[in-house]
Length: 78
Image (cartoon, rainbow, N blue to C red; front, top):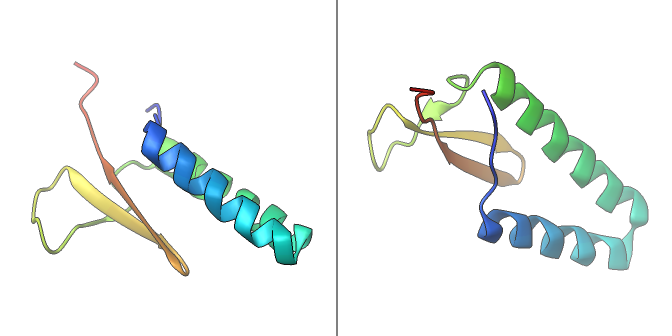
């Protein structure tokens, strides 16, 4: 499964990383590493996240990488 980030998601991640780097390059690096691990997890196990409670669609899912919530949609390959 391929993970494709929206422009909004990429911009949010870059903004968070820049904000963290102001205080600590280590924190910024740790953030990037944790997000990359989560994205690799989703490539291998796209259904590993739980369904988003407020929507109830089996294809709209989320994983939490504290304190961040990553909401994503699973598309079939066909």
